[in-house]
Image 1 (cartoon, rainbow, N blue to C red):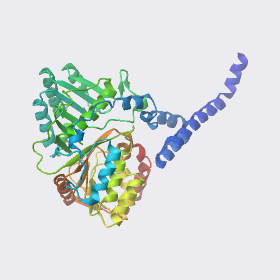
Image 2: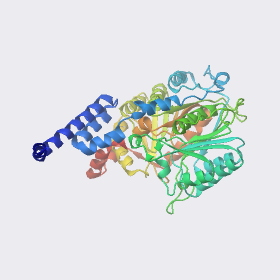
Image 3: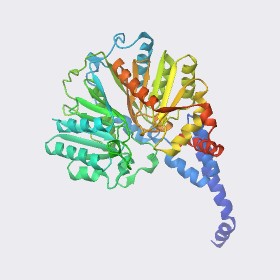
Image 4: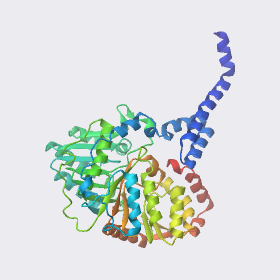
Length: 488
């Protein structure tokens, strides 16, 4: 025993070094072998090797996509049990009435990627910001007759959050089935969390990726960014809007932030309900089925006065990884006239950058609107550092002044649109659970175009010259932050 004690006393630094080196080497090899994106692989290997203890610990928490590799993946896939109703008689077989011929191949791509059929006989109405969205939510809840299902990334315990929570509690008191799912990180954006109020009011509430002892650290980097509200299985609201009063009440003497949401009726609602039911079962092990959630007879939307084809595209770090990424790549490949993009966070990877540059070089008008004043300063630094990669090819980038706009909008050739919860950044494209919709509807495309054109009139162009005019220290800062963009 004394010999062992003497040995450890003399050689413990060497043993600690070898142990640390061995653990770091294993973690670095795992990152190199499992990461599909070369930037992410290089970044994680560098973090692990240059900071062996912290880097390895951080990689174990945030770097391993366990959703795709272990029991959680199996549980999430097993949660897909709800039937996709009304797909057959409303499925689009001929895209001719809905879109020009050059976009027909985009439907084939969506057929392979989404898992949901493209549907007709559904309506979609754009809601511009909190002043239109929150009243629509409250009216929908108060007029509900059977059920309310709601999921959100952020559900703050502020004035608008409490008003919506009270409406949900009142719906439960009227005898309705009510389920609320909030991301475990997003639920902590305000204190006290809104979950306490909902649970006291009898509303069945759950946190996504959470345990009885708090947040699952192993999955802390994989969040549900979805925002869906479904009423009676027949009406849905989805889009970029979290539940936060900053989207309806001026903050610090300024003006409310802006976003976009969408109101849907018709068969498309079943697809959104399927996504919610899958996430709810994954989080609570309760299966939602039957008429309260999936009506047996879901008629077409009564106010659909023009041809609309629409489907839901779910994405996330599970079997749907890369869905939105591939849908956007396809749309950029078939575009013939214009690509209009509005996003608060613009950090595309190299394939998307190449697709945008190729579109611009083919003569396509590519306009990208991003905020002048971003709510995430570090993301803005990284965005700025990367803009030179698309400006040289003819893409136009606009910095919108005024209020911060959180909307995620994309439209191609005035006929095809992609809207929902996804940003064009690594987190949305690979780490978050997101829900978006591809829509063949000239009316929606025109609304998006008008909204983007309006933003451009209040914007300043970002050019290679404006990028070079920034002080060198700021350029260096931006590039250093950009190196961490896969983790922002």
